[in-house]
Image (cartoon, rainbow, N blue to C red; front, side, top):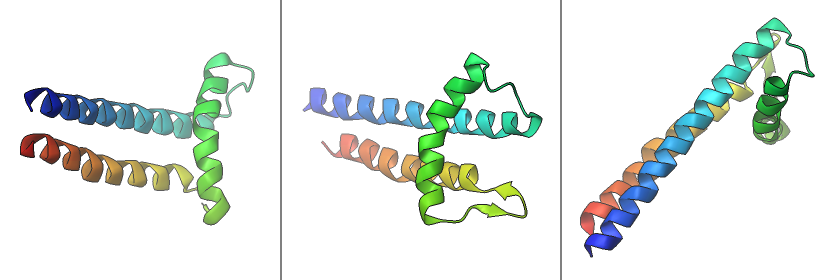
Length: 98
């Protein structure tokens, strides 16, 4: 049972880390759009490839431009924070119960 508990904790910790990294990617991509970067820059291309699918998913269901401000990054960050608080905490509690 210790092995299963440790495995669940490891999965929860990795999920927490991946969510936090993606939150920072979204924040960096949102901040960079304010300065009109060179679209051929490899860093900008990577950031766009990482964030645009999530933005498109949000924009399909919710019109996210209010007064020229795109709210898709904020909605994604709130969603990721909810997943982090709910799912990761649930996995840690499951690991402690096993």
